Image (cartoon, rainbow, N blue to C red; front, top):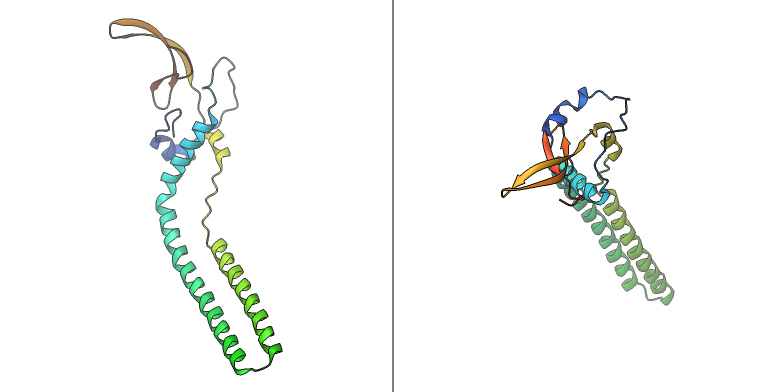
Length: 175
């Protein structure tokens, strides 16, 4: 993805395995201004687009599995509740009915815990490694350009990004 606009960089994606890291640093090159909030939006959008198909397949599989597990849990606790209620009806002792009510309350609480556990187990988590961004960040050059717009000459601050071979007008500087 190219900053600041967030356009997809297919050439980089195709050739990232061949990327050669360099250790040389030239202090006279001015990097683009940091905009972490904007970069987060761009990276999140790029990540969502990149994994959308895979996440859709995982989501469908997880939904089916979760539905089966919740039905199994609901059936188990439904049968257990019916069995306890039948026992309570057959018993005439107050002590047995009190125990049955306690068991029913405990079963309802456990039923809720088991359902919550299955929801957590079937949650889909995507954990991006944004530190990899540092491996592919590239240098850009800041310059002041003399341009003519509507027959009016003006000077604008701009960045040249070599990979995209484009000038990006710097939104932070007055034109």
